[in-house]
Image: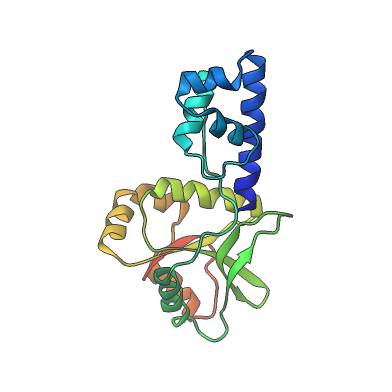
Length: 206
């Protein structure tokens, strides 16, 4: 909620500044947009938390501005039951000397992102990302690559739920996977059963 309030205050300031720069009154904007003067006043004072995005878009358009919104990775998404089950299936395959920690923060200060997991054998570690549903593998790859670069990570295990859709996506992007994640499920699980972490990145389908 704090983040939403911050965004609303910024939009309110931008709206009021743009209106005054254009020499328009609230009545002028209300007449052009069909939004009531009372509602516009509340928006400009950041006192309309439920204002529709459509209303904001229309008002900014009248003021000669285009409202744009885009999400950015920050923090860790809520882990659902399917992801917990996937991590559990993976964990039960690990021998005792291989430790799995979950929700491992990045080392950057004030970075709210976290890895889904981290495997360790002694001082050797390897990060883990778990995906239950692959909708856009290229977007997933970009997100993971950015985290790896920001955190100085050189190898990673991509854990994917064994579903018909996921296998189809993995086949479709076989070339991308071979370049970024060269090791297969069998190779990675074999290394882990031997009490070693894989030396390169790879995909595990469970």
